[in-house]
Length: 304
Image (cartoon, rainbow, N blue to C red; front, top):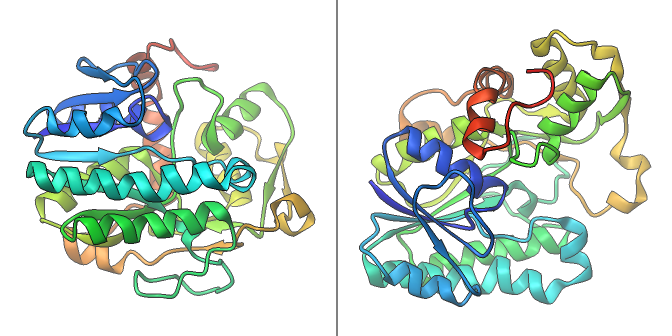
C-alpha cells in the first residue's frame, strides 16, 4: 500500500510512519518541519503545497493528520482553526478524489457536547461547545461533501511522543518514574485508544473499504484519573502518586465536554472483531516504548 501522510511531523503523523512502516506499507511523510523516522519525505514550504503533494504520485491512500488540536489556540485564533480544521481538509479530500486516492481524515470526540452518560453513536447529534470541536465537525462535513467516499475517523488517542513530553501517556509515565504527585480528573471520561491499535484498525477499515464516519476509539471509556492508575499498575509504579481531581473545578476548561465515551459498534461490524480496551492499549504502549523512541531517534525514554 502506497500512502502519503499529511502532517507527518505532528503527534499522530509521527506515529503513522512507525506503524505503517511496520505493517510493510510504502509510506511518505509530508510536513513543514522535519518528520523523524520517515525514509521518504516531502518538504512543504506552506500548507498550499499539500495539493501538489497529493497530485505528485498515484497514492493508494492519503492520510490527513493536520489539525490545530490545542483548544486554547482554537479559542484565541478561530480563523486559523477554521482554515486548518475545516476549509483545507475539504480541498485536500477533493484533490485526493481527483487523483484516484482514498482519503482518510481524522476527527475528534470533541464534536459532541459531552453531556450524555450514554455512549455516543455516529448518528447522534453533536453540539460541540468549543471552537476546536465546532471546526472539526465542520471539517467532517467539508471532507464528505467534497469526497463522499472518504473515511472520517472520530478518535481520541494516546501514545509516546517524539519529544517525550506531550500527551497524557508522557505526562503520567514521566511523573510516575520521577515520583511526582499528579492530578487526574475523575469527571472527564474518554474512550482513548492507543495509537498502535489505532493504525492497526485503520488498516483493517481500509481493507474492508470503509467510508463515511466511524468512531475509532477504545471499547472502554475511562476517566483521566483511572487512566493514570491503570498505567501505574501496568508499570509497577505507585498509583498513590495520582490524586483525583475534577474538571468542573477548573473554569478555564469549562468549554470541554465531560463524558465523551463513544460507541464502537459500527467499527466492530466493519472489521469483524472486538475493539481493544484502553488498558490493553496501555500494555501495548509499554511493550513497544523502546522501539517507538528508537524510531523517533529520541533514544530510550526515562526509566527504560
